[in-house]
Image (spheres, rainbow, N blue to C red):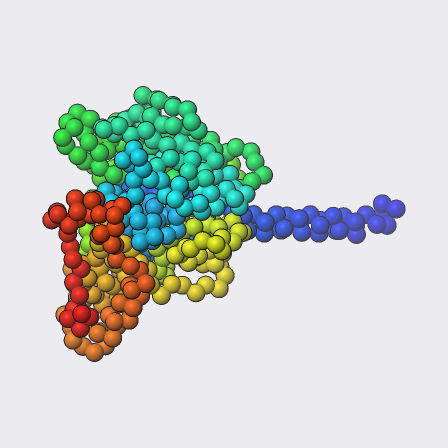
Length: 458
């Protein structure tokens, strides 16, 4: 019997084994682990990958072996960006227009977006069967309101000294005086993603680096925070350095590299999507700036070696409202039909499927509205630019200012974009809930910028 049927049965079992394995791979690809790492105050021009000066070998590898969006927009300020990311809605819907202009609770602090909108990044990924965690800097209210099942959030003080860690880990305060704050966050990340479970995991990880902090030894002075020093071989020297922006970027790269190695060691790398982005432009350059796209434009890298074929530089347009629909589609879910979302999923781009990109992206901050197509831009001051194929706004003359042009083609283009802006309302400065904030932080300050409108639009 064995002699007669052994080989066919063996081949059958092998075939079934391969089918099961292939099925597992397909299932894995349909429901990958996902992490979104958000850095604080960094522009594309800071990275060599985008034509800047700072080398980041890990992110360069992730971008060239995955993809990196040449034009990705957040907002020019951190809290409006986080509200947009966590809700999938533009500021005119969330009413979070600036760090100081947003709906407030009875305690005077921002009323969490998760308490005002039931469908958030955390709740939707949890609802789709993912183990979810938020790790890092929240800034937008109670972490539990966003539907994350687990968390490790940083406890901020008036002076945020990153030489030690002070975190809320799943409702318990954990203080470690000999562990750098960033190291403690990545330690929690490694532990959470190594836990045994049949469910895939999703992590939202907003880091503090390289956001400026008060100097612990001189509270009146601000600058890049303390980070462990790395030598030329990217090994820790045992020393700490402060007020060194490049050292902060190097250390972020070092920690991301360590997480990639962790995924390799735990056999998860081929089934994980890593997204890496900034929350707004760099301090003193793009942060809180209405000019060009300095404020909203951020680096955005996607790496998924078992799913995404290497693409490198990608010229598709995305903004942060796209993150929720992308993650939900990667999770195999569908967006709630009884809610409004402003984004467009780029999951097909990651999975190598047919993809139709966005014609435009939008950003809003204070009273400024920004609109971008692949070759044209209206900035927060209402200036109009022809960008062509250029993507580096920091290069003088790269974008052609045609605001005052009376060329019929220019006027027609601007009018077409203005029709889009009409669907993205400017703030109502007389809104009873926010009017006092608008008067204090916008209208009565030198920050007030009434966006320019050419005579032919009036």
